[in-house]
Structures are given as structure tokens and as C-alpha cells.
Image (cartoon, rainbow, N blue to C red; front, top):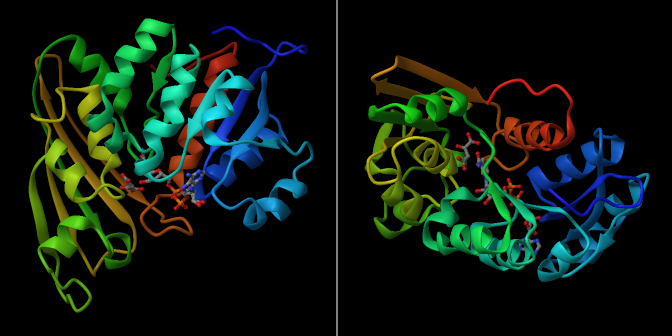
Length: 274
Ligand SMILES: NC(=O)C1=CN([C@@H]2O[C@H](COP(=O)(O)OP(=O)(O)OC[C@H]3O[C@@H](n4cnc5c(N)ncnc54)[C@H](O)[C@@H]3O)[C@@H](O)[C@H]2O)C=CC1
Ligand SMILES: O=C([O-])CC(=O)C(=O)O
């Protein structure tokens, strides 16, 4: 990765200061070895001015397509509808883009070729999931199947296109209801703000068409619960995670921490985990 600033630090820009973005900005401002927060892009600057002013070194506010001009790594943490507008200008300049709205990558997969052509990179953090290191490793051999079951509290699913289009009433549920069963690709269309995790899992393993997922609306849980079963020639493994929701009930608190961990690895001397 090139483009260090005068003090030899990698410059990071953040697109979207919501639940995930504000935590990443705060962590960078408090200090991550070898990294500095250079800019942010927000939809409504007035809404975020107080937060930005509260940082020790307030970053510039720039339009999303200009972040790559002042950063080596652009972190996308906006709605998936904005993914292309954020990632395309960055990778065209040969910069790295960290993508959290990874479901949106499936309809914009040409960005991977664009990054390759221009020397850029697209980095997908483990996010709200677990064990993508093991899935990556198993995929070097042969993975036979990847199955995932996601259970979310009602508030974590409200407004999902699959629920709206099929006119499913989840507000009055008393028992768990299986909403969807199918591929990660189809799940991402029906639940674009709810199953990024399934898409990340699929890209680490056997792809969005062969990765199977069930999505449940579950009034008995208070966390976003993901269980995964992987069957491979090297290993069989089961993984589970129960995510504490953030201020955004669709988003697990651990997601921002995963991005911060990924950013730390960009300059860390000791890196643990693949
Ligand atoms: N990969 C993973 O494991 C996970 C991914 N996600 C995804 O991460 C993304 C961000 O999630 P949250 O921070 O919880 O969402 P959020 O709704 O709290 O924040 C999104 C922010 O983006 C801002 N925004 C919207 N349009 C913008 C634009 N044109 N320019 C700049 N900012 C803009 C909004 O004003 C808001 O502040 C979502 O797409 C979500 O689905 C969420 C959880 C886990
Ligand atoms: O994948 C997502 O978009 C969010 C999610 O399930 C979680 O935070 O647990």
C-alpha cells in the first residue's frame, strides 16, 4: 500500500458516520498505530458537526467521490445504495476500500476488476460474523457445503424489502417465524441491511449461490444470532455468534470493532489470524 503522509502514516477516510462509522472515527482519533483519520463524508454535515468538532484532530468533510484523493484507505459504512459511489472513485485511484455493506458488492462485482486494473484493493472485514479465517483456509481445499441460520429480534428486521413485498406481519409474532430460506445472493436482495454477514461468509467460501441461509424473525431473542455449519475436506466446523445490537438494531456492536481490528492489521508488526 502506498501514499503514506509526511509522518509515514496511512491515511484513512470514512464514508458514513452512523453506528459503525462514528466508532471507527473515534478509534482512529484516539490512536491506531500507523494510521490517521484524514476525512469523512456525511449526508448532512450539520448533523455531524458537533461530533467532528469533538475529535482531537477533526478530519475534513468531503464529498464521497473525493475521499480517495486524501486517503489510502476509504472505509465504506453507509447504506449499500451508496457503495458504488464510495468505492468506485477510491479503487479507480488505486486505493483500498474497506466494504461493510458487502451485500451491495454482489451487484457491483465489476468493482473488483476495476480495483485489480488500477492497483486498488477491496477489503471485506469479518464484520458481525465469526470465523472467516477458517472458511478462507478451508476454501484453499474443498468446501462441500456452508449453511447458516440467522435469527433476529423483530426490530432488527423491520422494513426489509422481503418482508414489505410479501406483506408479512412480524410486529405481532409470538413465536419464531422462518422468513426465508435460499442462497446468500437471494437473501441479500430481500434483506440488504440484515444479512451482509451471509454475503461475507459466501465470498470467503463457496460463493453467494452455493451458500445457504435461513432468516428467522424471532421475538424470543434480544441479539442478532448467527449459526454456521461448514463441511469441508479439511474440517467440519460449527460457529455461532450472538451479537449485541448497536444504536442501529440491525447492526451488531462487534461490526465496528471488526473494522477497527482490520485497520490495525494494515500497519501492525504482529498480525494474528488470517
Ligand atoms: N458486514 C457486516 O457484518 C455488517 C454490515 N452492516 C452494514 O453496514 C452499513 C452501515 O451500517 P450502520 O453504521 O449500522 O448504518 P447507519 O444507518 O447507522 O449509518 C449509515 C450512515 O450513512 C449515512 N449516509 C447515508 N447516505 C450517505 C451519503 N450519500 N454520504 C455519506 N453518508 C451517508 C447516514 O446518514 C448514516 O449516518 C449498512 O449498509 C449495514 O447494512 C451492518 C452490520 C454488519
Ligand atoms: O449482517 C448484517 O448486516 C448485520 C447482522 O446480521 C449483525 O450485525 O449481526
